[in-house]
Image 1 (cartoon, one colour):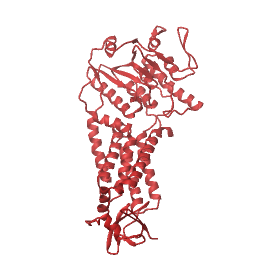
Image 2 (image 1 turned 180 degrees about the vertical axis):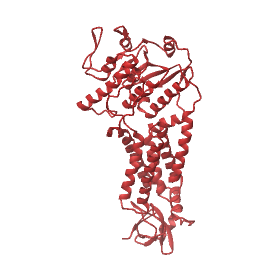
Image 3 (image 1 turned 90 degrees about the horizontal axis):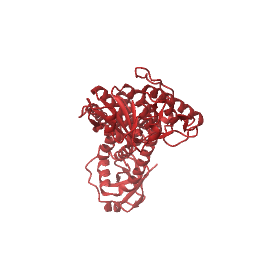
Image 4 (image 1 turned 120 degrees about the vertical axis):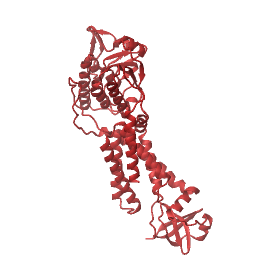
Length: 482
């Protein structure tokens, strides 16, 4: 299974690299629209898509880029990276259309563009950093986070010619904003501007936005842009990456449940294939999404497979040792959580150099960085556990599952004794020996009679002495003799 996963991963990575870099539409001379919707700023794969789109716009000579914003916000540090790296390196002009919301991270993206326009009924602001799970920050942590965020946003605002006091008031409740002697935002509230407020004139310049417009075509007219409007669309593999990162917990659920069912019988069957496909898609999707680079993908897959091997050894060759299973589980968890989490930017002011480039930020470990990965892992394991419990309780009762377990576990072409005949051939208290491993079903020999039997809550190796503990309907339940 290991070589299958590695081979499939390598093929998908190579195919994904070719597909992601390709594009059907050239951006040369065009006005490229990047939609930013409600859920787009909470998906790292979407940020990677926007980053690649901006690179293409520069490489192919687009006339301009317009962010069509309708977002309540999203991931802070991914937004900062987009502001301070991708948008600073962009050669075409950039604009933001607040249509109708640019809140939190959306407001910060708007400030990082060359010009901002508001829809007639729109609002922008409320950019104070918060935890994604709704947990309140301590005062010291809040002050530190606000200071770092304001420093970065202020540097970008100055570079783009915007009023830095506006974005500061959007981030920090303690900042007051006055326009022409009138208090627009006091020190008890976080600034959020409506369309009319955003275009107020302050010191001879618009406070936040250039004008109120009703469409993208009006922005083109206002900026004298001649190129055709084209909407940037993710490629197939980028869509896969966005889907995978959004529903990673479901892939973990499918992979773990499929792996468990596969381990109930030797050989490689449908459950094993489903598990392999789920985890291959999981790692491939995160690779395309930018969570992992090539060498990190290889390391994450290797650690994951090591964990799978250790768990398999615990369940098959060394049941009850616990150490192998625990270490294996930790390896699997570490690989999956790391893959879903990526790296966090430092909580420290980072200046924007004159040439628009940033030095690599130092590494700053924070457990909060892995909150999303831990949550997805926990949800996936919980769902898989429920499926495993249902499978252990009900699937052995079904004829197809009994036939699958009997034939594969016996390892030969043994002709199964009909269930009713088998229960008549033995009785409670009879002693015999397992012919195959019981996981939980297998074949047991009582004298010259071989029957299908099961063990509850455990695993018995081939050649183990057993006793019939109970006969329930067509089920023969045995227990090991100690």
